[in-house]
Image (cartoon, rainbow, N blue to C red):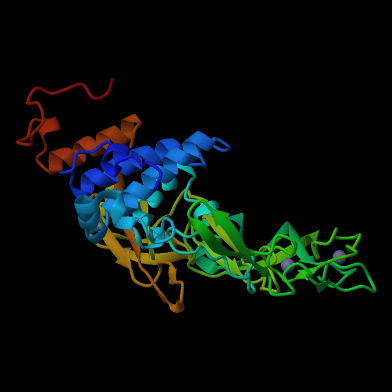
Length: 387
Ligand SMILES: [Zn+2]
Ligand SMILES: [Zn+2]
């Protein structure tokens, strides 16, 4: 006579008409409450969890549910014990929901059988992590390119053990726990039966080798830190915030993997004269009213030094001209350069002496200007400008 079991619907607290969604929701609630990982050592919770899981495994499977609805527990008796195929039931999404939050998606060790066996394979060679540094250069250095020297603490293979981490005269030995494979298979008795999990060997951390006598210089890590000078070739055309990769100057790799890279971020200082946008340079040049009106040969500062420019008579304030090829070199094509745009600003004198004022008034009069009572836009009543 089978021991009396609670009705599966009662266990999950749902009506017989419950939909698949309702079954899932009910089970999720119970699993969250009674899961052994949340109630370590609590036998009562474990029993409840097992009971709910059993009910769920049957009711979520349409075929089993149909049998259960027709015959009750008798449908599954006479098989020499309970034989619910938990692994075929759809637990995975429930547990990933549940424990993705609860345990940060980490181990869910005791129930490896649910969502497929979790396998952490042996660590092959892994490149070391990249490290970062920063240099500051001037605006002009960014245009021309430059050589900089950085002084950093860098890890390098231990000179004592040559990177093996083992004391001089010894060498790492094959790990006895995993036989050198770096992984172990754990067979666990879970409440749902046997479950096999492959994990990285804890003794050798998946490397398959164990250092018996550690190198005293590097404490077995195989690496030492040393203050080193690193040459950084900054290419012409680099822009603020871009990085230069220096291969092999990052962190050491694992399991014989290569070093990571050093990424040097370049910060470009602002310039008082020149502004930059991609490969173009922008600046402003002050000219006088007379220069603007009459034209002149002027000198314009560029990143290559001053260039002569023929200012046209009648140049208006705000006129922008382009000096072709005087911009920033293209990073990957240094013989091609952007342009330099120059905006002319017309300087208005802030202070003038009597002579200058008279000259300007005379000029204004000659132009028929408003200041001298002409038909310009100014006041018709003569203003005393010689105060
Ligand atoms: Zn060493
Ligand atoms: Zn091992």
